[in-house]
Length: 329
Image (tube, rainbow, N blue to C red):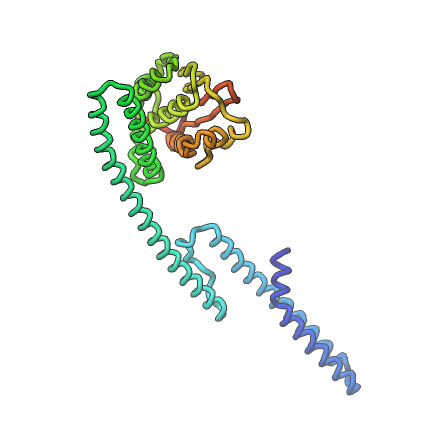
């Protein structure tokens, strides 16, 4: 119905002109007292033929409209099958579309080059910065003093931030080095926990780690990053108490802390990019990137991450590891 109304609106000048000419002929015949029937008959035939031609043209216009609708469903790079050119307007519009497509292609190429160049630079920077970090860690290991331990923890956080940069850069890269295999889940958890041993000791936080005896199809390095980020947050927002790591059915890793918790209004948005919430704003050190990366990585691995929390009662982060799409390579 909408197409029909638009079609009549587009051809209203032609229809009005035809009716006007017919009226003029009838008026002239009447003024000269000529037989009006002599003009009514040919006018009726012309109206009938005009309607038939209008219907045929309408079907042709509808076919063209359908072709253009099909083109709307594909990307601009695949827009090749334009309707046949039947007017100067058609040719002009298709030339304009061609120029816009070429301009868009050039803009995309320049943008992709700039992004690729930036990613390469920061990737090289992240790898270069690891060398002085490793050197500083070795130097601090030879000392055992409160200052050395504090510096070691600060250095550990810097190393975490560098890993976050690398993860962020690689997340959307076509060359992301996923290695999907079956792993011992306990080994992955132990590696992550070992990195935070010093912080557990310094903050006097108890770790309750219950062996899972599970095996999981995943990428060890990327899943380790997710667990480390969750543990880092748990330690950051738990002044005292216990962090519990256990397995829930069906194959769900549960990391529970007794920290300050998350405000109810913040909970639905903690996995959004850049969202820090009340605790992050109060802490003034949160970037809002860690949990966002965790969600993105879990999605890429076929896992799922969720959170439950309440203020002053701690937080529970669950990583749902059951999946059907991934198979060991």
